[in-house]
Each structure stands twice: as structure tokens, then as C-alpha cells.
Length: 348
Image (cartoon, rainbow, N blue to C red; front, top):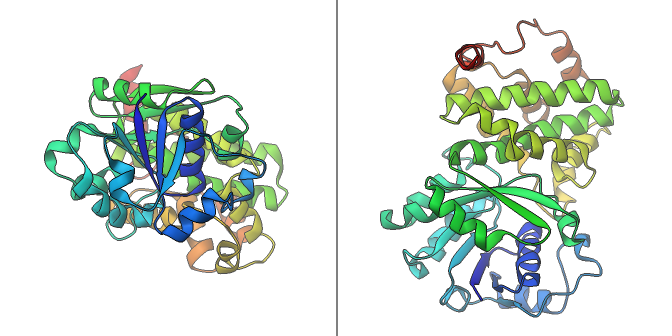
């Protein structure tokens, strides 16, 4: 059976480990310390999502990188985005060119504005770059742990490499599609968290389904505009890693980012909210990165701007919503430096 290493004991890393081990793959999960490994082996999990879950026999946990990566065919990086660089640096000496390197994190690096696959590429030998893949989609961990059906996308610059990763990652209840638009797949997974923060605010303010539907749709248009500016295929955002992930994350109470947005409407501070959470709400840092990118590109992104001001400048959630409603509306595919109108006119 194939051997797979998972770097990171995040909720998503553990979930992928359980799902793949149930498929009968040999999975080795790497924990940063012996203490952390011992806790997991004693079923002391970091999240309530794992209540009642037993670790499969094929899933082992180790604090030794050498042991975790010995003879594996694929390495899945399931760490918070802001620690990706330090983790891939530690992993790099143990890689060889036959291994797939799969990014499963959904965020952008704060200091560089880079996507996670770009961070990985900077820290591993160039000969290994063709083996870099990204995994993304509407994948709420709690549902996958309960064996509920889900789908995701694995993207690589080569269709052959994406299909190779697909074989490793596909399980009876997790259907994996392939794509070669690495930029679009990765940005869809990261940027939707910004919109999920806003969707939580919409729900927290009690604005109803009409407002939420409009907000999600306008958010998707904004994500697509930034994605195009960064080199993505806009049609990717109508798929699982764009619209699909956006719907799941904006609609579910299981979403961390939705939770943060909703709690902000109760008057709680961002620091208090995130400090009380067991996992990372990636949308908080992604908002800052996306806002800075929009400023550099002179791109009109009103939703991102409002979420940024709520998180970092003290704008009240209700005031942000009112400002969005009072915005000078135009054609729904038009905006400063957007290329959506011209693209879809060419397609038609």
C-alpha cells in the first residue's frame, strides 16, 4: 500500500490522516514534539470535532521527521499558512524528486503575499517543483470525519502529476477532481475565507438570506477579479474551489471564519475571539494580504476593504454593512482595474 506523510496535527491534517488511513493507506502523521505525539496517541485531540473518533490502525504518529518521511510517496503539508515556510524548510532535507508535495493549507503568507505552493517552491530544490500540488475544496473537517460525502480538487501544473495525486487522495467518501490552474485553485481556497468572515457578520446582524446570497455572489465576483489579476483562469472560481468552497464556508456554523464574523457582531474583540479558538481562522491574515495586493494593483475590492477596516481599523460591522449598501453600484462585472467584462465578452 502507498505510504503518505502528513506534516501538521491541525484539525485538517488529522482529518486527512484518518480519511486516508481508513482507505488502507499507510499514513504517518508528524507532530512537532514527543509530548504532542503522546497526547494524540492517548486520544487527547485538539478539537471537539474528534469526539468519539478512534485513530485507524494504519495511522501512526511520530515526532521524528526522518521516520515520518521514510519511503513515502506523498507529503501533505497541513499546517497553518504562517508556519508553512518553517515547516517546509524542516521537511526539505528529507525529500526526493519521486515524492509528491501537496499543500493542503488555505492562506497567503503575510510577509510576502505568496501562495503556499510558491512558499514551498522557494524552500525545496528546483528539480522537485513539478511535484508540487495543491488540495482545496468545500471540505469541512467535521463532516469528513463522520464519513459524509464530499469533493475536492487537486491541482498541479501537469495533468499527469495531478492525476497521480488524485490516486493517493481519493477515498470512498472524498471524491477528488483534477485541475491544472494551480493559481486559481489555491486563491479560491484562501480568498473565500475573507467572504466567510463577512457572511458571519451578515448572519450575526440578522440580515437574512437575500442579503447573504447577494453578499456571497458579490464576494465571488471580487475573488475572481483578484484571481484574474494574479494570473488565474476566472472559470476556476465557478468550480469546487471557488463557488463550492465559498458556499460551504459561508453557510456552515462549522466554519471558523464564519464564527469569527458572527462573534464580531456581538461586540467581542478580534483578539478575544481568536484567542478562544482551538484552530486558526485563516481569513484574518488573508484579509490583510488581499487588501495590500488590491492596493498595489489599484484593484477595486469593496468587500475586502470593509472586512479589513472591521478587523484592523475598528469599523463597526453594522457600519461596514451600511457603507457597502450605499456604494456607487455599476455593472455587476465592472470595477476599477477588473477585466471581467472584457473576458466574458470575448468568451461570448
